[in-house]
Length: 67
Image (cartoon, rainbow, N blue to C red):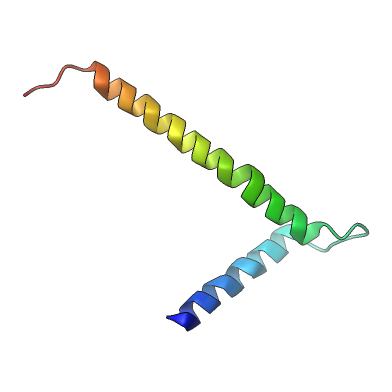
């Protein structure tokens, strides 16, 4: 199990490095990729799914039950 977790971690780090690209002159490639993924995209997706869940819940709450 530990080997599997280590393998997944290695893949995730590699993907972040690919997304971040070469650091360039400022050295923000990998760090910028981390910020974009974990500070912008992840919270945005959580908010989006929460809003969609609330809309769906409201839509079904307004329909009369058939029991």
